Image 1 (cartoon, helix red, strand yellow):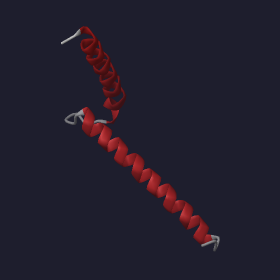
Image 2 (cartoon, helix red, strand yellow; image 1 turned 135 degrees about the horizontal axis):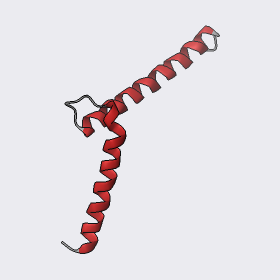
Image 3 (cartoon, helix red, strand yellow; image 1 turned 30 degrees about the vertical axis):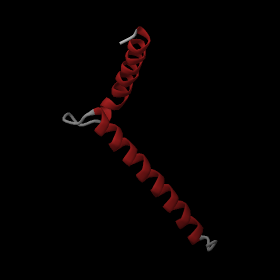
Length: 65
């Protein structure tokens, strides 16, 4: 493996470590970082869906749809 590839892998490893540290507080003890990221993404999308539904509901209450 050449030095450029090793440097690239080291940089990726550091980035993944930072991501793991950010996600760690959202993970259950037995979950992996990937599972934590998936769970955060699911919560984010659920929140977006609720916001969209609230917007449509508010328009409906104003008789705009």
